[in-house]
Amino acid sequence: MLQWIASFLEDCGFEDLHWQEYDPGKWNLYARRGTSPFLIATHVDVHYAGRKRDCTVRDGFVFGAGVLDTRGQIAALLDAVQRTTSPAELVFFSEEETTGAGSWHFEPHRPFEGALVLEPTSFSLCVALAGDVEVRFFVEGLSGHGAYPHAAQNAIALAMEVARECENIVASFAQHPLFVPPLRLMLGKIEGGESSYVVPERCMLECALPFPPPYGVEEVKERVLALTRRYPLQVVFLDTNPSFSIAPENPVVVRLRNALEQVDARGVVYAGMPSWTDATYLAMRGVPSVVFGAGDLALAHSERECVSIAELERLREVFLSFLGSTV
View (tube, rainbow, N blue to C red):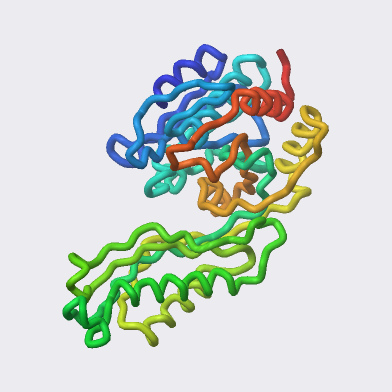
C-alpha cells in the first residue's frame, strides 16, 4: 500500500519521500511537495475483523473492509493532490489499528502549525480528543455445580458486575459538550467457563474506559484500581492515552473551517473524537491536531462498513480548498 502511494505521489511532483522503518518490516511514509505550514496525516492499515479483503460498489457507496477507515479518505486526498500543484506535506502511518507504533515513532522533521488527521467524522471538525484507559481484568470466583449457583461464586457474573462498575465510572465524568452522544464504555472481550453445568471460577474481561478533556489518565486508573477493594480481581493496564483539545482559533482549524465553508454552505460542526487516533501522538509531539473526514465512524470495523462516493468527492474538494488549490 505504501509503495503504491509513494509511486503515485512521485508522479504528482512530490520531490521528497522519506521512508521510516521504525521496527523491522514496519514503515511510515512521509512525502513533501514544497513547504506547507500544515501536515496531513492518516493510516493505511485496516482492521479486517475477519472480513474479506475485497470491496464492492453499489448504489453510490463503496462497501468493504477499510473503505471508510481510512482508505476512502486516502483516495479523496490522492485525487486532490493530483489535481493541484499546491504545496503539501503528508504522512501515512502503519499500525494505527493495532499498537499505534507508527505514529508513536514518528518525529516531525520540523515544526508544523498543526496537523489534519484523516478519520471518518461525518465532516465534523473534531477539536476534542477522548483519552482512554484500556484494561484487562482477571476475575476470581469459586467453582461448583451449575445447579447450585448459590453455593459457589460465578466469575462470569462477577465480571458482568465489574463491567457495570466501569460503565458507571465513564458515566460519572462531566459531560463534554462536544461529545454527542456521551462517551460510553468500550466493552470488547469476555472469556470464561466451560459448561452451563459448571460454575466458572475464572473469567477474563477486556474493556476501554474513554474520558473527555480535562480528565487525566491517572485519575481514571485510580478509579479502576479502587474496584480491587470490592471485587476479587487482578487489573492489568493494556494501554493508556491522554485526552486533548485544540482551540477553534488554531490556524489548522481555521484553515479547515474556511475550506469546508467554501465547499459546503451547510455550516461547520465542531465535535469530539470518541476513539483514539494518531492525532494523540502528534499532539504529544507538539503538533496541534484536528481530526476530520467523510463517513460515519460507527460503521467502521463492521460488516456494514461503507462510504458514499459523493461524500468522498465532497471531501476531495475540501482538500483542494485546504491546500490552496493551484491547478
